[in-house]
Length: 213
Image 1 (cartoon, helix red, strand yellow):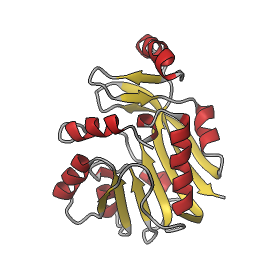
Image 2 (cartoon, one colour; image 1 turned 45 degrees about the vertical axis):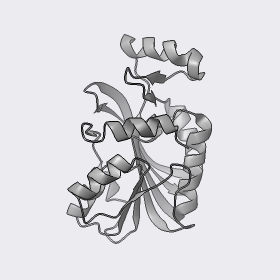
Image 3 (cartoon, one colour; image 1 turned 180 degrees about the vertical axis):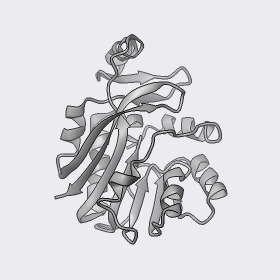
Image 4 (cartoon, helix red, strand yellow; image 1 turned 180 degrees about the horizontal axis):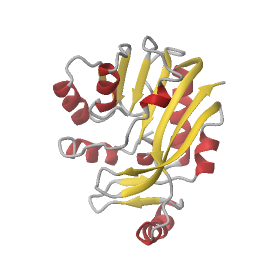
């Protein structure tokens, strides 16, 4: 599901990148209890899981395909259950989790089919009625963004995809695309936000909570 070149990028920037996208705990707690099993897909260095643990959630697992991120997470939070994956399949059983978290992961998976495959895997490991929580980025109207969306549209055949100078490729989405991608879930919350990015910019974004049908 992930471009291997992206994995090299994340391994290289392991120690320098911080992920500022805020987790909406108050909204999350309306649907998720402390004893539910939670899987963070693309957990990075475990920032969100550590925050959840500090708030009393205890059945927590994180997976990421960057060994560098996993190593950083285990060093910072040695009591967390963080697992290195191959980036292809979610290494968990069918209907194993009550909740899956997906924070700024879709942005680094720019192909439609790969995003669809990821959501399918998430649906597989979620119990019936399970909760999906997503934070990610939407299209921006600032000229800087419009220029780079247009520049890379011919390369990737998707408006909203762009490449950073250091080589990593990211995607900003339309609301319609996100709702189509998650159509196997019943949407409970979809709120637009403005987020800081890991590179010090601001971007339109959203958080979404859905229930597996």
